[in-house]
Length: 306
Ligand code: GRG
Image 1 (tube, rainbow, N blue to C red):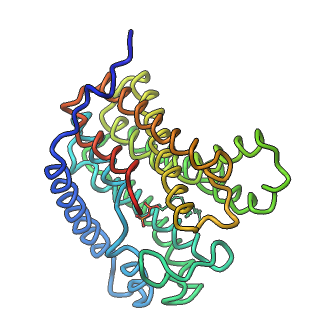
Image 2 (cartoon, rainbow, N blue to C red):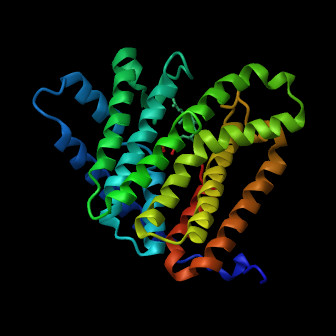
């Protein structure tokens, strides 16, 4: 069958999309705040509580929860059912950023325009805040409502695998190590390495946001496999555009990035091909009507400036 051309996709009214996105982010922020605040008890150490709230609010782009809600909409999965899971993924994302900023890793002083957690508080508090967010993420998964225990176990297993030593942590280790080895690697080795780093460090968490709504829905294996592919490519697209932003703003020193391996021109062309391929797959399999929000998010990821 001939692939449906992306040109058939007519992006819906941009104002409608931006207004929907803004509302969804605000709603998610207040849901996340409610969930977090309910977890604090009178004996929660004050400093830990402050560091948790400081690290999560006002927060970043919230792209992972938004992707999860957009896929939920495409598959007819209730947003309310996904909220607790989206919070869990956002906690994992924020834990990884706090730890990534530490002096022993990226040693960053600022994130999202404010002091990093270890600079605002101290290194021990930053490590423990990250640990607390990661632990709470799994507590939230264990409490998901209206989803069978079997599906919850399937989700917990997948999240554990994707953020563990064969996933996010593997990506981070390879990323740190890549600084030292990149000069000695040839083009083919660099290509393999950058792909492995980006898939593990970034794409897997985004892939989770795409496949979890499908697990909740209980789709057939064939559709789940397709959503894994869509999620992985959307994650790659996100990281490659991140690399382009870093390249443009000179923040890519001592880092193995897509433009460093392939050059800026080829990287931009890869972004274009990934967008086309993603939209074709989504439109062909789910139609434009149900997936307009996700299609607009893909455009947003590809054209973003931060
Ligand atoms: C420390 C286990 C561990 C992992 C760290 C997340 C990470 C792995 C490193 C952070 C640096 C980085 C460039 C990661 C790639 C993923 C990425 C682009 C994160 C930033 O995500 P955004 O842009 O952040 O969604 P906001 O601030 O919007 O939430």
